[in-house]
Image (cartoon, rainbow, N blue to C red; front, side, top):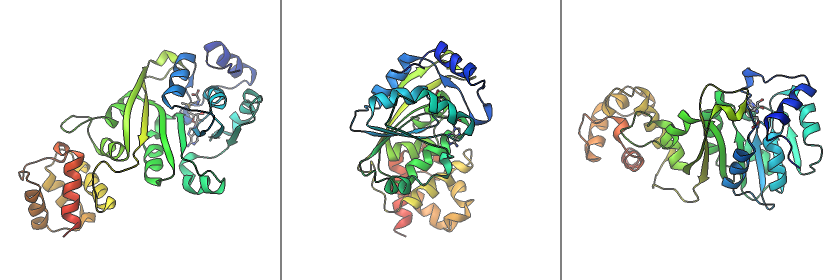
Length: 287
Ligand code: SAM
């Protein structure tokens, strides 16, 4: 039975092993059973599912995952937590703990090597200092992933679901919306963690799209354009693209492409929707 979704359970484990949360690894342990249940139900986990957890910590969420899923593979960077996990997860036979930095894992290869063929569900209370590289790594890997249900800093969640013209709109919004259907499931106050983070958090569910939401001839071109447009976000799209040598088009070709998109020369990148970025990308690809 899960014993850790509470303040008392977590404090007792920390005391028993004489450990403290390590700030360097973004350790904030979730102590609210209701939120844990909400995460499991948002991820729609069944006994048919294989789950990948990033950062099991002392095993609080892992206990809930083990009870709901068929199999759980959990990647934890902090060696000191391994004996703790041995203890808190001792009653579960369907969990594998891997002491590895998730940013160094080739997830496609990992799944193939372990004969995991059915799309997996990723569930995590992420270390906030590396949220974006973890998410972008998973999305760009094109690994067989069904969904990613994550606790992240609210400000990052707001960026993920932001729309053109908003201050929070940027490369992360476009990448997340290109690859996934993103939905905020719950807002979680700092009091639900030990130690308490300085910021509020959001549980996000990212359902990986099976078919692209926009038609793009060359994805690399799309993301090069997006990076170029937000690299200097106060500049016009025209200047942003001109100042991005990697794009490799002349100023007149860029002016022509923006005209073809039907936008004025003064338009800023942050005003373009995903559909418009896709159109612009296809204009350049066809050149
Ligand atoms: N899952 C636990 C919970 O909900 O209470 C802990 C979540 S805590 C916010 C983040 C966890 O990720 C910590 O256990 C931390 O050590 C681990 N972590 C940090 N960086 C990591 C990395 N690069 N790879 C794998 N785990 C990492």
